[in-house]
Length: 291
Image (cartoon, rainbow, N blue to C red; front, side, top):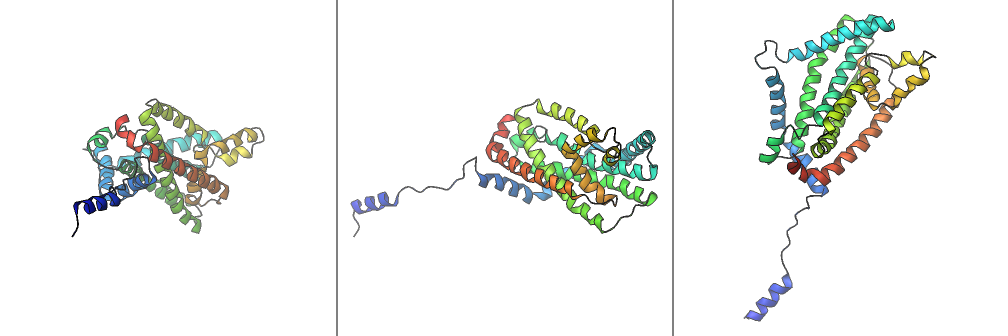
């Protein structure tokens, strides 16, 4: 027979039940946020597509205007800068168009990434969803824009054939790397910009400067062959966007693959992903208050 003292002793020895709840600043919650957002692919996939349809609502051509606008800009810049630099239009126009194709994706991830949480203020406050969902939505939307613009590259390859080979397959992992970098940039810049609202206009100004410092409408190799500007042209190597453009443009144009660009991009990707994970771990719980 169990007495009251025995029951009291048993309850004391058992001790209180402690529920293992991870702290708000824990790696478990940070990776859980990324995993939960990835599982909600139907949601952010639908939202990303609706973003594009909403932008071109009541338009006859709809999202095709994305490709048309890029084709017009690429043609105008290709003819203008090709005449200024004395380049052959058959090779220079596809060069400029492919550079713009990649730049639009990079620029979209940087600019919109800095405002990814600010733009979704209402959803973050009232919808219990992981922060990564908004990042996935942004990157997916930019991917759709890229695929639309890829039509311009395909048309130019038909009009101005290039010696495309098996190296073209490298465009797939190169674009995957760009998507991964777009995601960590959006996480990192989005969290910082949510806390400090001066960051988005600063980033917008810097991206305009990066466009002119990146070999998109000018060729880096051509400047290196000119002894008068070769030394100053090497400053472009410090521009990280140049390497991201190169790893994708080279296979798309059938150019020789320069692995130096891949090494630089790989290093930046690892460092950037680690930094974004640290910020996601430490500040994800504060974003809802900052917005």
